[in-house]
Length: 119
Image 1 (cartoon, one colour):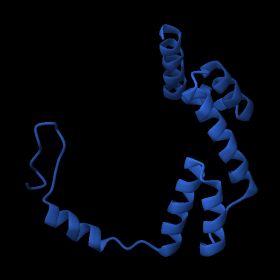
Image 2 (tube, one colour; image 1 turned 180 degrees about the vertical axis):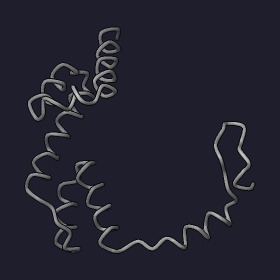
Image 3 (cartoon, rainbow, N blue to C red; image 1 turned 90 degrees about the vertical axis):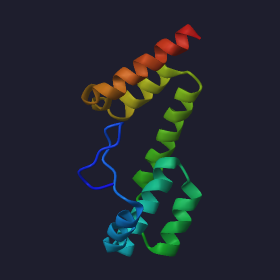
Image 4 (tube, one colour; image 1 turned 30 degrees about the vertical axis):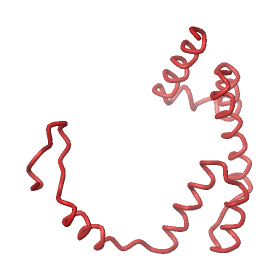
C-alpha cells in the first residue's frame, strides 16, 4: 500500500519493505536504549533486574525510583485484588493531584470500583 492508502479500519499502512527501510534509518544511541530498558524494569517492578542492569550498563537509577516502584506495585496489586478504594487512597497519599489532574484515570478507577461492586 502507498502512504495515501488507508485500510478499512482507518489506519494508514505501508509495505513491510518500506517499514524495514525506515526502521534501519533510525539511529538509537546506546544510552537512550539503556534508559528505555531501565524504564521498563522500573515500571514493571523488576527491582533486581533494574539494580543489576544499573551495575552492568551504568544507567542511572535513584533510590526514589526504587521506592516508587514498590508503591506502584502495591497499588497495582490492590487494583488486581479489587481493593479500588484502598488503591485510590494510596495514590492520593503519594500525590493528591494525580487523580485530580488525570480525569481518565479517575474515571477508569471508579468504573473498576463499580465492576467490583457488581461482581
